[in-house]
Image: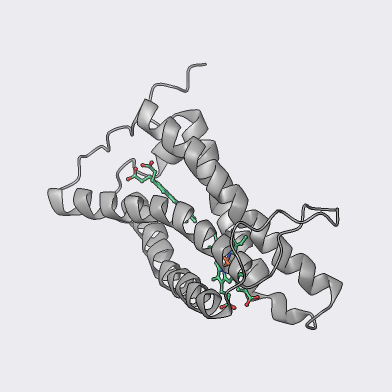
Length: 179
Ligand code: HEM
Ligand code: HEM
């Protein structure tokens, strides 16, 4: 049976899309819910380290995904979008790709300048810090990291609402191309 007839994103892009969506969700949940555990507890440290590693994984996968995206492109949408929607979609996707790169970098810079550590999972080995401690800078970087994190609740929300609007409102194949 041939299921490759309808235009879809390349398999790598589809898999990376859903995997990264889950990692982003986990990155948010782990850091937002760390307050469930007391400061200084092992459980809280696990949540925070989990957040760091979700973010680092997103950073690594983003480069793979960008490479794959440049190679295989995006399939056309049927029926085609008007120019305004096409530009809005493009800008949202660009913002999301930038988010995959910028957020982890800001996070790492925050960790290093704050004198915190990223531990290799299940070991007591820390990744080397590439910057000296500077608490004022750390505070600024953390503020920017958190602000972008808050803004992207809206951007990601818009992206998801748009995907469902395409499918159930406009009845086009936007979503099916990603499944
Ligand atoms: C796309 C990836 C990431 C997302 C979406 C993200 C999101 C967030 C959000 C929303 C917060 C604020 C939590 C709050 O207000 O309480 C936060 C805090 C933080 N994130 Fe990230 N983050 C990412 C990657 C990283 C990475 C890779 C690191 C470091 C390795 C990191 C380090 C931190 C630190 C140090 C804080 C402050 C937490 C604290 O106060 O203990 N983040 N992040
Ligand atoms: C229920 C959740 C989600 C649904 C239904 C969904 C659906 C879609 C669909 C249908 C597309 C194709 C859009 C088009 O070609 O115009 C797409 C693309 C994309 N999605 Fe999602 N998405 C979801 C979650 C996420 C999350 C959480 C992120 C990251 C924060 C994300 C990032 C992206 C990016 C960067 C693209 C652009 C792909 C490209 O053209 O290279 N998505 N998504």
